[in-house]
Amino acid sequence: MFRAELDAIDIRILKELQADGRMTNVELAARAGISAPPCLRRVRKLEEAGIIEGYTALLNAPALGYDLVAFCMVGLKHQSEANLKAFAAATGEWPMVRQAWMVSGDSDFLLHCVAENLTRFQDFVIEELTANAQVDTVRTMLTIRQVKKVGLVEL
Image (cartoon, rainbow, N blue to C red; front, top):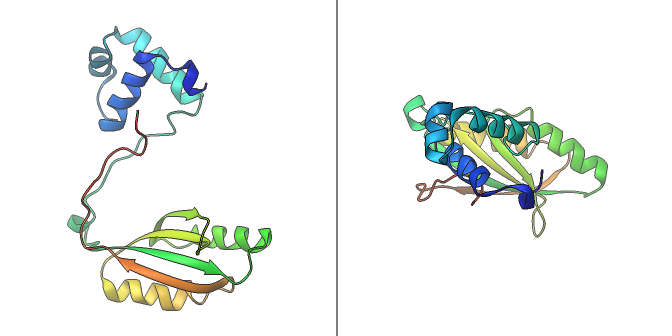
């Protein structure tokens, strides 16, 4: 299913689910302006097409003791496919790395990290990240505060 195949109701369903993925099908149907059975069929079709990848809960990190959010721009020593794959695999082993992107430009990867505090983040950067065999450079950016938080896709 491609964007061209999505009609206005599909787009409305996606907008509503992106804002609140926990609502009931009945509530979603009302917001989309259709009855519940066709709404459920549409949602299942969007899930099967891979447009809806899944459902998660957004957690309040500071309330759970995770007070630091940082980004790391990582440059590798060599950009061979094997090195890129090896580093990408390593990111999966680091719980502090919550999201990772392979990027173009001055760096090869951008890592979104969440830690309990600065000491734990520094330990990760020194003992894990810069110690990785593929890593050449690491530039870190500590966040001050998040100023915008919306769904990942504009519809």
